[in-house]
Image 1 (tube, rainbow, N blue to C red):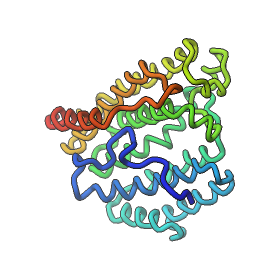
Image 2: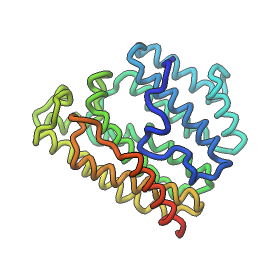
Image 3: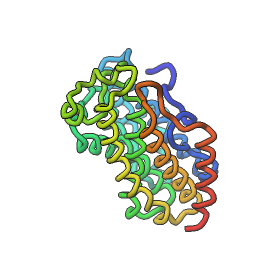
Amino acid sequence: MPSAPTRTAATENFPVGSWLIAPALRPVVAAYYQVARTADDIADDPSLSAESKITLLDRIDATLAGSSDDDTAAAMLRDTFRARGLAIEHARHLLQAFKADAVNRPCRSWSDLLAYCRFSAAPVGRFLLELHGEARSTWPAGDALCSALQILNHLQDCQSDWRDLQRLYIPGDWLREAGFDPAVLLEPAMSPALRGVFDRVLDGVDRLNQIAATLPRQITNRRLRMEVTAIVFISSRLAARLRRGDPLAGRVVLSVFEKAGALLVGALCGWRR
């Protein structure tokens, strides 16, 4: 197992279980995040073979499914989900994406990327919406928001993903159309042609963000509505920042103050439906 997490709740693009979430629900969010983080770190561990990664991920999945108790954190999450009547698929679907990461399944197209996000990102939003008792009709906008955030994270980490893991989340066909192979991501800065590929990805993110912008109005739980309003704001701001920034020259991020400001915006704008 990885010795230390590669990312923590504090370094995510989105707030994880922030003060806007009801205190009674924060432990459930934290338990879900712990299992997801552990599985993600397994998939990203360069010291493990693909076969070892799949074995460890299968162990977590078997625990979530109820056929074993090998993973303590997964067993606690499974029992919590059962007690609250939540669908364990929201956790198990994530493992399908991590297994794809473990074997470095290539991203051949924009459709491939969206299909990957269906398992790597959408389950997180669906879990939070179900936890708060929201209708399934909120899922499409929630899926769009989670997918946008996932793709933005891939753009931020594109260089280290290829350098350290030989993993590509930029649509391969778009790179080839521009005359590149993935090694171009190791350059110290973007060329104008590569900038065009990234902007094409960001065009797709903008379309997802337009759908995501409808989500706060659909949410009935006030605290969740405030949280989601903040996350929608963060996603839009980060997409704009990546339009101007160069993730090959340095990781493009929002500052702690910008994230705090987004939470304040969420609290103020999300108070009213």
